[in-house]
Length: 181
Image (tube, rainbow, N blue to C red; front, side):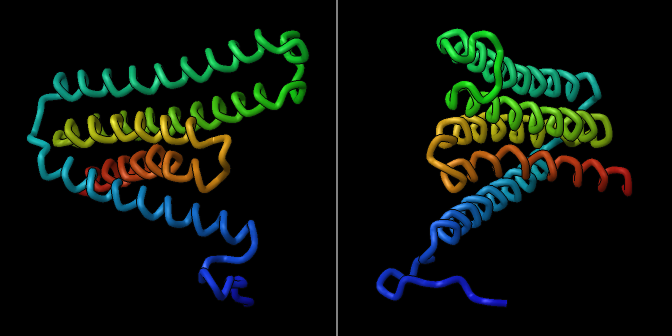
């Protein structure tokens, strides 16, 4: 296994790919740390609640996910409407429309995973209310960072990706653990 070339003056990775990978790794590590903290806070602060109260929290969380998907759909429509080459629906006709479609695709994927994870956690763990609320807030922060950093490359959007993905995985793990109790 060869080591990544390092610029001796800055000790930073020397190739563009290595720099991007280093940025992604750093951002994903931060996102993972935030997720672990939110899961611990959510679990420690979560009092046992009746399903009705947890259901209300899940409803707000699902609304949050839906609003982000709607915003991404609206962005694609707005960009397509403003593009002479893309208004008739052709893919690859306008790079701005392609970028908006990529953001929409990722947002829809993330929202689907989050909806399944939040739903499972809400139904299986009577202490889930705070964790689900924190994870939904983290989803919004993550989508904002992903969207705003998209045009600047993988490292710029990695924190946003991690802040939407890792909390969903944490919710799935917490739901699975609830089955074992």
